[in-house]
Length: 144
Image (cartoon, rainbow, N blue to C red; front, top):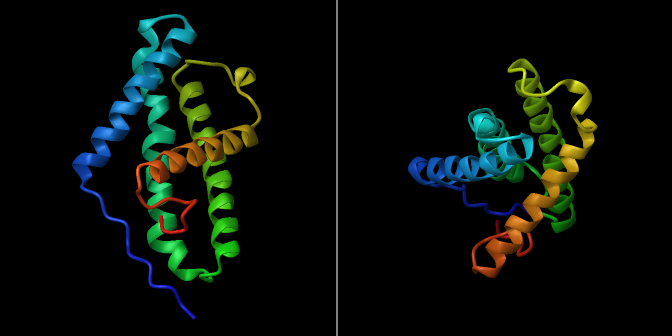
């Protein structure tokens, strides 16, 4: 038995508006924690990793990996959570490498790599709860 998954499509303009907007807002909050507005550009760049990278990770899962997996709900849930954890960990390492390369932070100030994976999973679960509340396809309903 194979499930018929509808590929996820979204206009590039909508994706960029959302990811750039969230990166600017979260970058401002991060810059404030780091000591001021002068760090806003670097903080915004770092926030692009989970915002844009996270979107691309979701696209990869929805349009490439999910159709190749068993349609069993347990397999789909396990694979999605594994992708969130591994992808979030890689995105966190990308953020750390970027911050270190730009001299924003020293590596000793970064949390363990796996913490980014757990944080990314938490953010995705909250985001999908918001989608569910809005009546949109989500992780919880099994349709998104």
